Structures are given as structure tokens and as C-alpha cells.
Image 1 (spheres, rainbow, N blue to C red):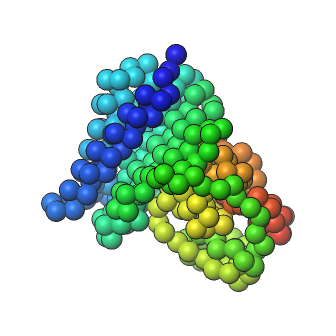
Image 2: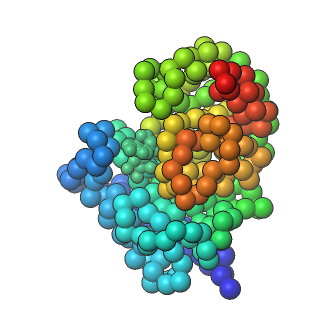
Image 3: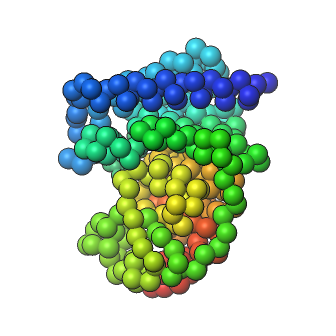
Length: 265
Ligand code: 2AM
Ligand code: CA
Ligand code: CA
Ligand code: CA
């Protein structure tokens, strides 16, 4: 039997230690490499942070499985037993260029059920924490359930790329939404954007392609508060698959899906 209280204490200790190491790294020179393309960056700190978590998890929980962006986790095909889904630094480009607007994201699943979600804004020392069935907290403050909001009062996060000619979505689909909402924002960290939807700083967020480690924690958080988490077609997300992601307040999510995303179908 898993002692969830003790596990939560361990995660918090590790997240705060990892965050401190990342803050200390601002004083030293980073080693930056590119991955799939010139905008896809990875640093020594991404790798060191993921290794720090995987080593601690393997020591304390040898029978748990780990999925991590930088590849220090395990090779597995299905969610069984307890699975940790980790993005050591989400928003690496911001980490490199801005030294802010990045987060550590950890989702912990029991079978295919999301149980605990952590998104740690390292620079602001803000820990967003979701405990399935028991609420969501930003540090010590319990977050309220998400209420519907009309499109014209909504702040929606999306990358400007998706309203230009691109490979993943017809550029004419999102333009009317951008015109109708109160405002758009783009933070460059999917985990942070999900945490902002949970905390009400944003009303919705949509993006064309994320990996499990980008949304594993945020999905648990938003669903716990009554928000809606799907792909761009309105289908549920599989926590082990890459996909588009569309999250939002109840009502708003449905309106955007039917009046904007599906308008040409
Ligand atoms: P990352 O910083 O952990 O790579 C903005 O680019 C957001 O999309 C970030 O949350 C980033 O996560 C994520 N992302 C997912 N796939 C990406 C890719 N191939 N290149 C850059 N960012 C990616
Ligand atoms: Ca990355
Ligand atoms: Ca990421
Ligand atoms: Ca990352």
C-alpha cells in the first residue's frame, strides 16, 4: 500500500531542492543544446533535474514507473501501478532567455487515474498542487472551482504561430476567436499555462501538440476544479500520448469547441 501522505512530503522536499539548484544555476554558465529543431532547447539543468528526481524515486519507490522528457525514466507501454510523469523544466526557452516563466511539472498516476499533480513556478516559489478528490492549492491557498465565463470576457492563451500559416491548423480557424475574446496571452510554458487556467489567471488555453510530461500534472489540476480537458476535437487525452490540448472553464470550453473550432466541419 502506498503511503500517499509520505509520498507527498517526499515530492515537496525534492521539488524545493530541485528548485533551489535551478535558482543557483542562474549564477553559472549553462550548456545549451538543440534537440529536434533550432527552437527546441535542452540544458544541463533539464538533464540534471530529471536525474535528481529519477534517482530519488528509484531509491524510495523501486516498483514505481517513471516517464521523463529527457529520457532518464523507464520504457513502458501502459499505465499500471504508480507512474510518475515528469517534465524537469517546462519552458526551457524561457529558462534560457528570461530566467522566468518556466516550471517543474510532475503528475503521479495510479493506473490511469491522475492522483497528484505538482507544478512549481521556481522563480516565484509558487507550488500548484492537485490532490484528486481533495482540491487544488496554490501554496497554502485553496483554489475555488472554475465558473463559466462568456467568450467576450475570456483571456485565452495561445501561441501566435497558430494564427499564421502552419502545419497543424488552418490559420483561419483561430482568427475569429482571437478577435472575439477579451485578450490573448502566450507564456511559452504549457505547464504554467495549465496552472494559470486552474488558478483563474487564464480562462482557456489551446495548443497543437504537447507531450504527456507537458500536461500530466495540469490535467489533474483543471479537472479537479471542474474545468474541461480535451484535445482540439473534444476527445479525452491519453496520458501516454502526444496530442493537441484544449482546456478551459466549463461552458466556455464547450462554446469555443462548437462555435469556433468546429465551425468549418
Ligand atoms: P519544454 O520547454 O519542456 O520543451 C512552448 O514551447 C511549450 O511547448 C513548452 O511547454 C515546451 O516544453 C512545449 N513543447 C512541446 N514540444 C516542444 C518542442 N518540440 N519544441 C519546443 N517546445 C515544445
Ligand atoms: Ca523540451
Ligand atoms: Ca515541456
Ligand atoms: Ca522540458
